[in-house]
Length: 239
Image 1: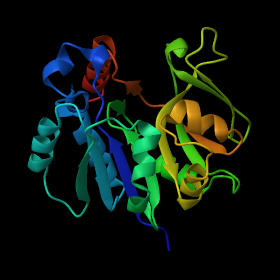
Image 2: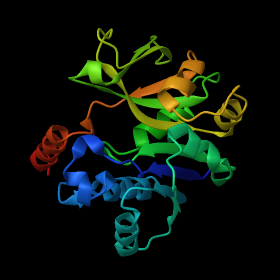
Image 3: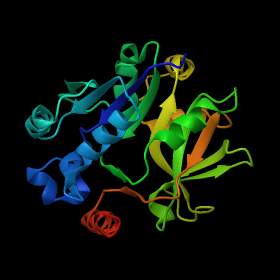
Image 4: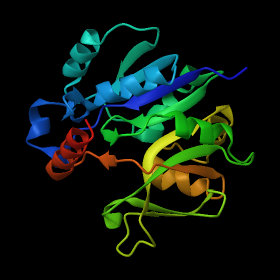
């Protein structure tokens, strides 16, 4: 019997690079194809039969709450947790370990736009090499200097990670979307110091133990006005 699926959707970011839009609207509510980013993720999670979703909030949290109140009720439970002070990706995840008890977990940045569904990533995670604790979504980027670039072996295991360097070795980027189980949380809990940043603290400690799944469909970090416009055009073209 497979484990239930639970997800942490990170929706607390300030979106400073997307100003002035984010002065009045949280980045996770940026519209793509006539639907807020957060709504796209909720739909994907529902399609994946996710049992429950935890959403962290901070910037303009009342707008996120209002959006969620208007979201159609389904069997998927939706819960929010407000962070008066941002904990960082790893900090938020580790603060809510109990939420994932007995489940396969997904860690998702709600300000990314993904065309594919979650089935491929979840299947790759279920079939990962036994020594791997984490499965990372990767995508091909046209701006490798602004991304975390990964190197993988022939089995898809991550062998090297380069976070936003001047001369990256390739264009296979970390999509900051991860699948995991209890073994990963136990590993992260035993790290020698409190962790806040996933890319610079957790991932380097897991080299050789991260499986990857590469999406060939559109995947965009909605970090600037330019990427927001590009994502809107991609979704319109595929509507």
